[in-house]
Length: 110
Image (spheres, rainbow, N blue to C red):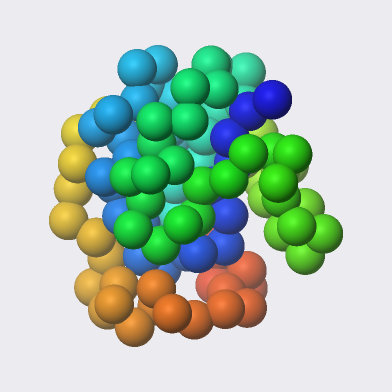
């Protein structure tokens, strides 16, 4: 089992989660965070830190969110996506985006 960052993170990019990760397995892109699945030790500490509930167990990913399993793996190994372990300010308009759904098309992968 591993943990996965899902759609709720897109356009918000809260980084509260990265400060508690003992493995530093979060990677940052332009408007989203991902967890490297081979580095995650399944401790679940990050889950409670996410203010929008974007982090879930890979076993609890809904059918609609299955795409995020592969996105976390692929993007955590994509050049330009950098390891992040220190908290940063969330993205502008994060309060608005925190309540929106259907954001996959907004995900910037490069």
